[in-house]
Every structure is written in structure tokens, then in C-alpha cells.
Picture 1 (cartoon, rainbow, N blue to C red):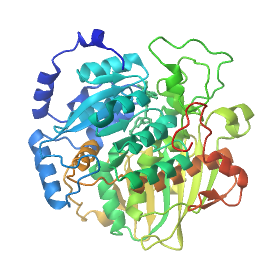
Picture 2 (picture 1 turned 30 degrees about the vertical axis):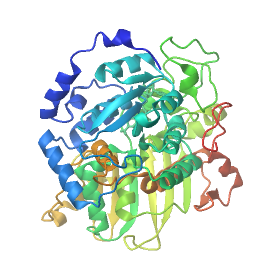
Picture 3 (picture 1 turned 60 degrees about the vertical axis):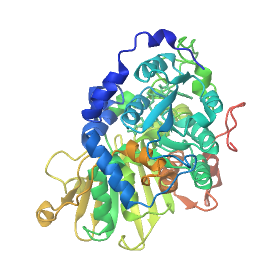
Picture 4 (picture 1 turned 120 degrees about the vertical axis):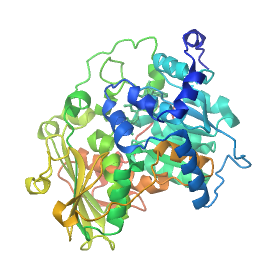
Length: 502
Ligand SMILES: NC(=O)c1ccc[n+]([C@@H]2O[C@H](COP(=O)([O-])OP(=O)(O)OC[C@H]3O[C@@H](n4cnc5c(N)ncnc54)[C@H](O)[C@@H]3O)[C@@H](O)[C@H]2O)c1
């Protein structure tokens, strides 16, 4: 356990702040939190997709949810009384983890009892927000020491460590909120999903926008066929500034340097191959650029953009996937060995169903320099084409989903009289907590979001083999027409870091 007494002396009055906060907007922390490299997500979280609740509204919502849903007492909380609290540990408390911590902190029936981060500065800041929480730099120690003192964890660390931490927590019967994408590799997603089902724990993928009214409206409109049967889907993430901020070109510096004293680089690297430390290219945030740690642009943003389409159309695992990538990356052996391309165009085919026109659905993804076709973008003439969106072309019109906003039906004139569905506001984090307390069920649980994440990560396999159409057989988890592709379905963990069969 890490001692942080020296930081605690500076702690303001957290209890008073918390009590006052209870009567204010639930997400005031998010609004006040300082924007940083991932500030985009925080803004999306704070004002677009996550409802703000007063304490009274929140309690009413959870009571109603409790009345409507069958009472499910989750594993690990048997015998919990109506007033009992969920004892929670936050693993990864900087970056998005700071956002996650503050969101959990606002739930009246959750108490954060343990914190973990490999960066002592991030841990110190979190410890100030949650005085009294036990602090760790090693998540393995946290899980071993905390034992029955915790019911749940959130995993908000770089992608390459999601599986090891989430799987270890599930094996100990803990409920898990895991950041997107669920894991770094397809095989990890499969194993984590299966473990969550076997253990019967409550899970939620960190796609907080899924709780927003815009996403839920999209799901409902697709399920009810408002624009007819869907013929084709165009998904994109062309966010301005993302290339410069996140999508580094490489190469790595020829030699490394000592990490700062505040950072435990061995623990940060974890299951991935050990790389010499270098500042400003890995920790924090920039790890996304590297194949060892991140999952490429589609892995990073895909779960957010794909989720409403996947749920709304009830998609099943992909049948084929093919990628076209930035040509400078394709021609550079050095970049291909280490980094992700700065631009990708991925095409999947999915099996058909009653909501899909024809025998199957083609879904295309565009990022970086690849954009949805002009005639598709021209369907939306009200503003600039939304950079992070999904355009679903139906037999009776089109639905434009915009990340964190309400969807638009096109042509607008045809649908202007259509009433929007009404939903109770919901907070994705609190929905998870309520589910752990037996009051409701999560909707982005791993058995639901795992197959979607697998398909998205298959896209990253296709990126490594540009121009080749991969045929996928879901059950045996195999690319059937190109044996070489299967080596990208799982990584070899670094010696000493073997976890859950990896
Ligand atoms: N849902 C969203 O909108 C959203 C937004 C941003 C990031 N994310 C996801 O959150 C995760 C973290 O991304 P980020 O941008 O915050 O990264 P980051 O590098 O900014 O922050 C990661 C934090 O985890 C800590 N950490 C790293 N390895 C750790 C380990 N082994 N044990 C404990 N702590 C560890 C780091 O010190 C840091 O505090 C990623 O999976 C990312 O995809 C989700």
C-alpha cells in the first residue's frame, strides 16, 4: 500500500463539499474539471449525454427502476440491506479515470474505499478527493489486500491492461466497470466476456454516451424501423486535432531515459513488451498511437460510435472485414511494426435480420483522411457534417446519429411531425452502481458489448493486413481464409505477467 499522508494534509473539506454537492448538479465536478488531452470526452460526458440529477430526482429514478425491474441480488452482495453501500475501488485515476472517479463519487450509495494508480501524482490528487481511501500503486496488491472489503472496481487504465485487471477482479467475484474498448485483443474480449457470464457479476463497458437520450433514441428508432429497413451504415470519426494529439507517427527514440520518480514504469508496461521509457510519447494519453498499448483509431472511438447501431439493429458478429489504410503507413515497414495508421477505412459485413434490408448489412468506418462519400455527407445540409457520427441509410429515409447529441431523421421535412420518445434521464455510471445494488440491470454489460468489441478489434486485425478481405468464423474465433491473420487475435504477455490463460 502506498502512504500518502503527506498529501492528505492539504485536503480541503471533502465531506462538506460532498454534502453541498449532493443538492447541486450531480455532475458539477465534471463541468469544473480541467480540460486536458481527453477533455473532449469529458465535455461530451458533462453536457451532452449524461443527465444531470438532483439528489431527489436520482432517488426517485432508482426507486422507480427498482419497482419496474425484477429484484436481482448480484453476486457478492447477498444479504445487502436497502441502506447498504457498494464498496468500490478505482483502478487508474488520472485522465478518464479522474472523470470516472468523480462520477462514481456522486452516487449516494457508493463509497470509494481504495484507489490505485502507477503514477504517484495522479494517486495523490485522487486521494485528496477521497480522503481515507486506501492507496495502491499495484492493482494486484489492491485485489489481494482488499479481499471482501470491496464489491466492485472500475478499470480506467490504458487498453493493454484492461484484460489482466478486469479478469483478475472478476475471478474474485467483483463487479466491473471497464473503460472502452473492452480489451486490447479479440481473444481477451472473448475470455473476459465468458468469465463475466460464468461468475455472474455485474459489468458495464465505459461507453457513457450509451446512457444519453440521443443514443437511446437512436436505438429505439432503429428497433422500431422508423427509417425502414437499414441498407448501409457509414460510421466516422474525423475529429479535428485528433491526429496531432493522439496519432503519433513514430518511430520510437533510439534510446530511452529514466522515468520520473513518480511513475512506476514496470507496472505501467505490465503485460506489454518492456520498452525504454520516453517522455511525451506514452504516458499519459499518447500510448494510443502504439500497437503495444492502444487499439488504433477505430479501437479508441469505435465502441462509442458503433454502440447504438449495434444495439438498435441487434447485430451479430461480423462475417467479413477489410481495411484500407493511410498509404504512407502501409509503405513504411517501421511504422507498420510499431504504430497504428493515422487514417483508416474499414468495411465489415454482418448477417441480416428483420431490421436489415437484403441478406446482410455492410458497415463502413472512416477516420483520419478517409471520409464518408460526398453524396452521403450531402444528405445532411443543416450544418457541417458531424465529425463523429453514424449515417444509417434505410428504405424509408436515413438516421444520422451524432456522438453525444440527439439523432436527426432525414429528410427532415418527412419526419418533422414524428414525436421523439421520452426517456427518464440516466447516468451510465450510476446505472452500473444501481445494478450492483440489485435495483436494475445494466445495458452495456460485457455479454452485450463483447461481441461488438470483438468485431471492432477485428477491424484492427484487418488494418495490419490492408486490402485483404478476412472471413471470420465467430464460434471457433478464427479467420478462415488467411491463417496469418490469426496471430493478431492475441498477444504474448511479458514474462511474469501471465493472467487468465494469456
Ligand atoms: N469513455 C470515454 O469517453 C473515454 C475517454 C478517454 C479515455 N477512455 C479510456 O480510458 C482508458 C484510459 O485512457 P486515458 O486517456 O485516461 O489514459 P491516461 O494515460 O491519460 O490515463 C491512464 C491513467 O491510468 C494510470 N495507469 C496506467 N497504467 C496503470 C496500471 N497498470 N494500474 C493503475 N493505474 C494505471 C495512469 O497513471 C493514468 O493515471 C483507456 O482505456 C481509454 O480508451 C475512455
